[in-house]
Image: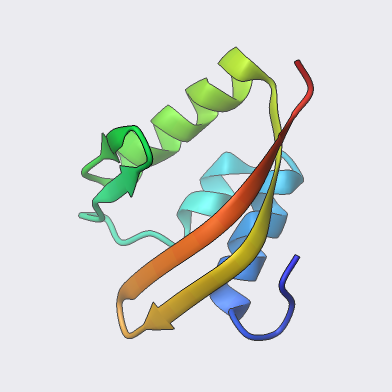
Length: 86
């Protein structure tokens, strides 16, 4: 995982990897919009955390490794690599 350059995103990924999807959501604003590779994931922190939790359970999503990220003010853009158990 990319360490040090993106402390907020790195910390959120570490929480996700430890099984704490609510902790992962702490990086998100209440009215955050999350656009994934397959379209909109959610348009609020609660929707996004629920979708991430459901996806984690449904497909055995185990880890999210941060490859690169840009944090500028309230904008976060990231590229990651996911690991699945199934």
